[in-house]
Image (cartoon, rainbow, N blue to C red; front, side, top):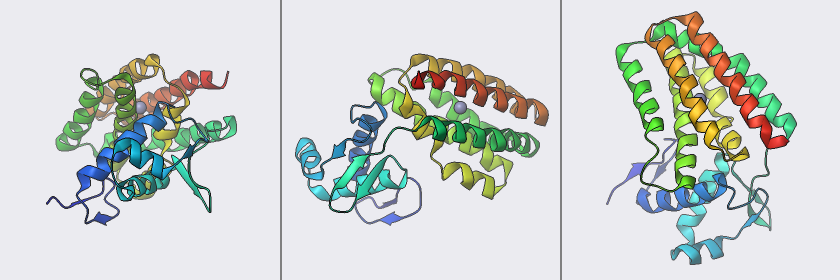
Length: 228
Ligand SMILES: [Zn+2]
């Protein structure tokens, strides 16, 4: 039997991870694509019946999603999908990212090694290929996850753990990608990432900071449409 740590490495599970992972992915995709609407109740028994499994892995998957802020648990009521970001929360998140991430990209360009660059490029390549076999929903939700990994990897190379945890603790990408389901979001983000990759590859701190700033600002402008 395969024993493994959960995907965030915070907790060791003694249950075969594949089952919980599968349930997690299933609910995650339905949340990201808004098939489960923001605020909607999520009944454990119904999900378990739909997926033809026991309630235990459903509970585990939901508590993982709760830690990411995608679902909420209320006493006596149970789980529901997190409400959509408000305009204020959206603006606050981008303000926070603009403070943090250009500086993080600058540090990353200074500290870049060829191994770290290869790791970041592997994530970027993954995002470009997130195309083919699967349906639109899982493609989009995988893209959101990979984008989170991409931005996290840059802060990891930057080397300031307080900065890195500040960003990852917000689960920014999950909430932002859930706002809107749009092909432009992915295509344009890839172009902006490409410019960022060039700056990081050249170990040019100022260009990296500027490319990150542009990426975040343009991402803000793209997703703003969700509030119109
Ligand atoms: Zn990005």
